[in-house]
Image 1 (spheres, rainbow, N blue to C red):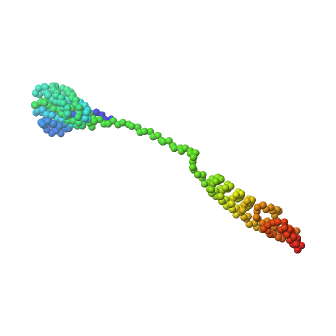
Image 2: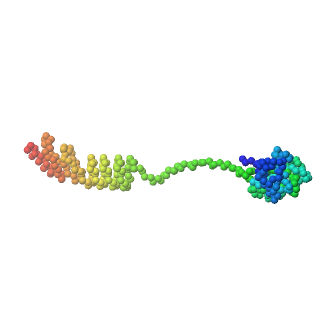
Image 3: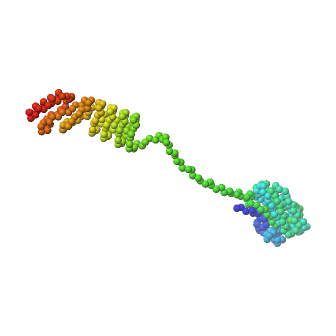
Length: 327
């Protein structure tokens, strides 16, 4: 944190080492480098510096300034100030006792009224002056009203303030806001979902009015009575409904057409053994097979007729008897 300091440079007039030029107890000088950063601001430029051999400086300093060398003059220094801020100038004055004991001096800040003072003793005496700064840089001047030598002696100047003029800004800590994550999104289930069933479904049961093709991987297929869908070729059993016009698959191991079916019976190879019985369906146009065996159960005739009646049965019996005699 910045601290208040004396913003006056070379306040005791010994920082620039006047002894480098002044080898006597006191000297008139025109080289202002020995009092820097002070400068002579009056028209009269010859100033006087006094060593501790003449009188002791303020608080151990070896140098001071008589503000009337051969006549009165004024010194000044530009200070860094903060506009609107009040400053107090504190000075320490003594006198050069020659030519009377009462001296006349003044203190003045740029933009403010002047303060006149009358030091009258060789003892260091404090004089204070207050002003309000109107700019960032303010010229402070201290001088003598006297027209002759042996004037007021200035030993120390102090103005407390900040080295850069205005106080540094006070930083305000603002904590960062705490991060709050957003809640996770959970979709609500929808009762009216139109999502399609996955293709890997193991069971397929179409509705009675469905025209959808059964998937090829379906293990069982049972079409409805009104379905026009083709039965899959790999179906192990096939039983069409009574009104179905669908062709029976060629690989069906069993074929039982309904009474109203007009479907052609599959071709059947020659019978290797006489069927024990044959009962044709009432409406069937299928030919009855005929096989004739001799007394040793050897096949001697196999054939079929397009119709079967009592008269044809007697002819067959007669033919059988003739063939037995020949045998």
